[in-house]
Figure 1: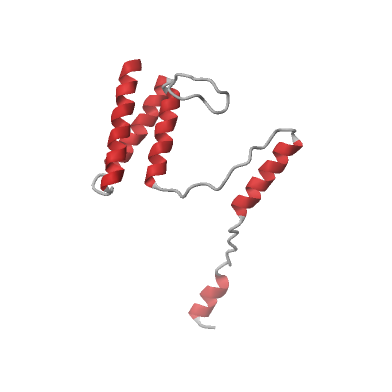
Figure 2: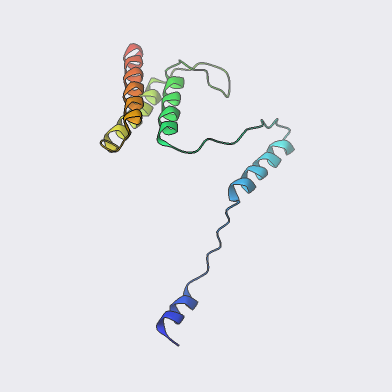
Length: 124
């Protein structure tokens, strides 16, 4: 038996389940319904990109700064330490992506960081 043929036989075949996300969501929905919880309908998620990541981290920081209500309980809460952590994550992202962003992405990140840092200074 040739070496190549032997290697092919020894390698386990991988089965990739592309539908795992849909299955997991369906199971989560079933469990919530079984527990009597109301499951909100959600449309398709937007594609993952740099802008969405920045906005997501900025939104979390704004919630921690008390600017936005927590969607789970409708309350505004202040957690300055967690806000600083999210701002620091954006700062790290700025450092790690230097020279690799489009003009629009850089402007977005710069403006978001400036606004969040100024708001943090007001509270701290």
